[in-house]
Length: 171
Image (cartoon, rainbow, N blue to C red):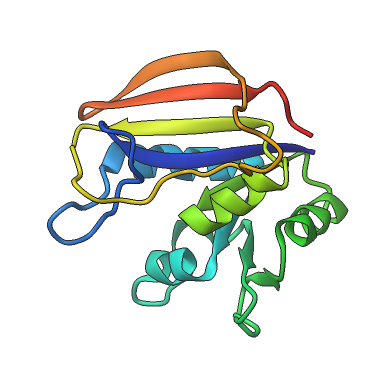
């Protein structure tokens, strides 16, 4: 199964921390929705999922397989909760998906990267500089660098630029 990690970064390379003073760019959100629809699923952490739910309705993702990776969450209506990245991928594979979209949370992204479970990364670079933020980390014990190949680069509008890379040395 092809695994695609999707993230929005600031122009200075941090994870874009959205909030009332810095809402997510609609172009990036639209791209996430399109990527999720194409994959038929997405994987997120509990905190990211809770932030996405807003006022609790199913929203635009009601017909997708949503997987929440959490060590502490119990059952969440309408989604599948698993304890690890490998469990998330196994579940989606059993459901017949050809691709998995890893949609959010620095902890989730870092866990997939550290286990070598990412085939492609999509970075949407937002036109904002952020003084303090979260970063992507790779397993520093076994990998100092991960080589990637640029597959595509395109503007999404609103100053957002999308970079898509293939991970060359997935283990």
